[in-house]
Length: 629
Image (cartoon, rainbow, N blue to C red; front, top):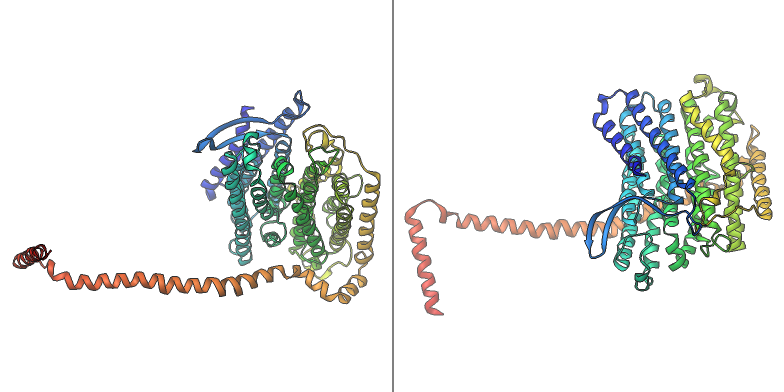
């Protein structure tokens, strides 16, 4: 598969071409070039997936881990070196399909959504850079190559979130995302260095001969790596950057913060899964508890948000929590014994990418129609936007876990894995699934039903989005409808062998009942125009409602810690010491040097007689010193 280099090379060349030519290219030409290249990359990814899975399993019954190409990039010492390559295995091939599909839909969608925007060419250049970075991350042959592309993804995200660089909110959001993820990535880098030092390899599967020495340090190394994944995937308490990242263009939210970038942490844990399950199972279980708390926290916050994109942002955080939990509850590599969660996590990653991208792109159509993110400006939009309405409903039903949509199948597998691990974990995740159904249909009813804002709509009548924006909605809705019937376990499983998905009747019935109950509750509270029940509950539990609306003041706590403690008690004294002691000492040396130079300046007057006097005086001085000694 020598052509696989083109999967990374083409979007990089697209980034260089569009970025360097800039405004010399017409917006239509820049968009067409970026979209065409992404389309070619998507076709190459589909061909790769077809050829890889079509080739079948090897003699041991697993899909082989194939390295299309690999070369030593940077020798370090001994056997330790950094390679660059292109690796194909079930999860990397699956991610190639996800990234290329969502990226292509976003490129097409952006033709309509970003039309007339200043910096249109720059936007498409950044999209190409992000696509290349994310593709490079998932096909990395070693952990250090993954880290290189990991950081490129961070840079791309910073550039895209801050696309509207004239808005203070966008500037602050891009910096916040970059800084928070950089702190997390410091843990990732330290973990990589510890891992490389003790295993003498950056490979995902180091030689078994070194594992006896390295296994005592692997839990620490893997735990530190998970910190990097927790930052990228917005796990609590490193989640604070994701809601603010909604300041970027809505298609960016669909691409980065729903389908690809935020699942990088999930992909990292899945990629290192053999090491987690073999040498650090306790760390793997800790990730499950972190994911469960994050999923619950984000779901509660999503129930009261009024900004449509922030509801979806917290929904994303919660769904990523589901994927992390599914990986964390694995107790073995055998899916029949305790590795069901691995397959379930990857399955949900695939289905969630499609319907969450659909939700964000649908939200973009709605914002495009009413020129606002606030749900109070919406209501009754179903008659103005029929295509957006139907496709948005499909996505809401999928994420709620309603049969036969894709979300039902993938979430059911996660809940089954959780119940195998612990009834408490299973019950908690089922409750969160019910909250998901509730807040998503709260969002749906507030947008498409309920009270119409007739005054605002009289000034600007809502309208359906252009076809360049509705085509991706229809395509993603179609995938969402059928993706659940893919025999996913035949392609991806924790031990590589084929696994037949079995719907556990008890778990499926319980999850369906909880989902229907959540939808029914949302219908009772938000379908009617007066919404007296919702308003009454908000008043009765005003303290809880206010705290959830303000995200339980986590951002304020960070502000207090950074400004009142770190800045005031640590940074300010250090800055004073640097300014007055360190700089003062250096300034003193400069002043003393200047004063001495003024004193000795007459020695270099250019007068030969004075030079003779200084010469003779110096010679006599040296002679006297020698006689004395």
